[in-house]
Image (cartoon, rainbow, N blue to C red; front, side):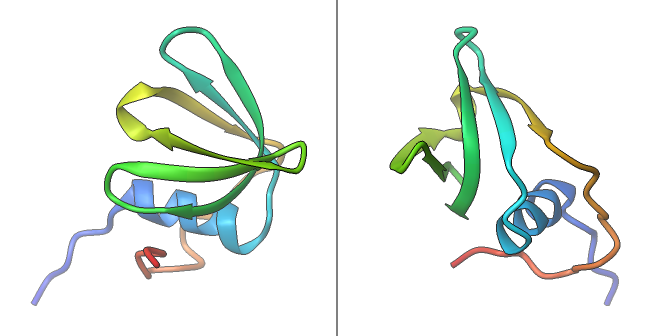
Length: 80
């Protein structure tokens, strides 16, 4: 069976596993800087300045990691 690669999950999982700091830009212009701790189909949990915040994915515009992320390292989903 051919299984398509889910780029979103691969990207978020690499950020989470490697504790890569990222800036999350929301659709309302607000920015959250921190580490992705978990994610599922609808939300992400980000640790920002010692506080955990759950953000709905539909409110997110862009993720900007502090360094490059390799999308070929992990083929898992990262969902916990």
